[in-house]
Image (cartoon, rainbow, N blue to C red; front, side, top):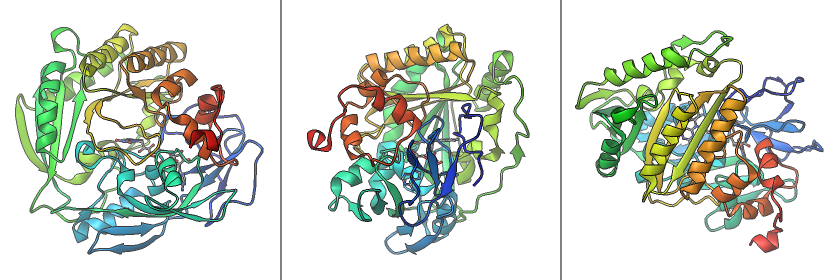
Length: 446
Ligand SMILES: Cc1cc2nc3c(=O)[nH]c(=O)nc-3n(C[C@H](O)[C@H](O)[C@H](O)COP(=O)(O)OP(=O)(O)OC[C@H]3O[C@@H](n4cnc5c(N)ncnc54)[C@H](O)[C@@H]3O)c2cc1C
């Protein structure tokens, strides 16, 4: 198979490329001393979708939709189906993905394994909350149905388990009833971070979707200014789920990332002023609302040859506002600007996943062109702020956190290690959990 497997952050790979085999309906007979790892569409930013030295099991060809019940909204599918193809099928029938991340080029298997979240976490929780059941293939057992009431521990460990518990070969996911796929978008331009914190809870109470874009370069009294972007499905809008192909493409990787210095400052300034002062309202198609970056193919190349490091953390709601400010100031102090900065309030709805990332609180996402040591130092400083505030760092966006940061973010990690398939491992698991002392046995962890 092709040897161009990478993560979305385009982290430097081994000189010989990465080896992959095509996934089938069962656990692959082929074994590798360095383990296997199931692979979706590679939209994870860090190294949780990589397994250097071992094998990737590419599941993207397992992309059949096996059924959709338009009465109950239950979708039955193989794990390689892209979210784009789900929307195409269900939107004309008055249904929508209950949880969608910021790109529709994600597989159902990848969405389950990372237990992804969307702009409506405050209402719908994570993707896993909508997974009725799935078939799990492990190297040490026959195929298993996993659901809340059957193989419940493996159901929980697999949701958000980053592919480590086995290969999901089929899943059933519940869709959400909607009046249309069009979104009535309400944007409020705010002048400083505190204004966002004042408004976020009420925005969540009023709207299905709510998220803020932050001008991460603004300083002084303007620190944390941005747009609070809310949305609801329009009662009389379009029922088309068709996605338009990307209109632009970044044709090559520039030798130096343009997403820095004055150009970055100018972009933030212009983008901030793009929204009218105060509040504005308009009806938009679902694509630009949920997936603005999908409109530019290969946009990750803009981060230059070193690739892109994304940092997403969550801090508890109480006292968390101070930590969010500290995270933004930390990037300033390190002289590095984040191109796309997003702030959101996670809600209370618990995830069914054993080590899922979302939990109640404020989640801030920052991304930086990787400039080597300087950026690594910044990532470590951001990790410290998040952990000291009682928060966590997102493992499927991350490529740099220390084992200690990982353990502080996910104290229950030993239970996942106990459920890990003995034939499966990933680069991020090797870099974090497997460097920690006292790995638990399944009996200890249970
Ligand atoms: C532009 C952009 C915006 C994003 N926005 C968000 C967001 O808003 N919220 C959010 O949560 N995430 C977001 N992400 C991250 C992305 O949604 C997740 O990383 C997603 O899980 C990637 O899915 P994938 O199909 O590309 O899988 P991959 O990245 O290839 O793999 C993800 C994980 O799933 C496992 N896996 C894949 N298939 C299977 C299978 N069949 N069985 C078992 N395990 C499997 C892999 O081992 C790996 O650990 C965004 C990413 C991008 C590029």
